[in-house]
Image (cartoon, rainbow, N blue to C red):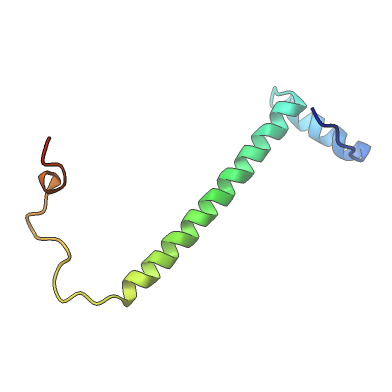
Length: 80
């Protein structure tokens, strides 16, 4: 376990927020870390999607990349 030093007013505010949510300070901080990580992951996913869409817009297809009758069976021939 690691200890960190915070100014009293910050520690008191964090503790009050945690208690108001019915959480320990440790659980509240763990929740905040997870939310921050999820937000960063979402941001990366959005950036990647934007990059891939931009690259796709640069592609010119003279015909549909998939046939009109393309189905799941074309991918999974051992089960529908």
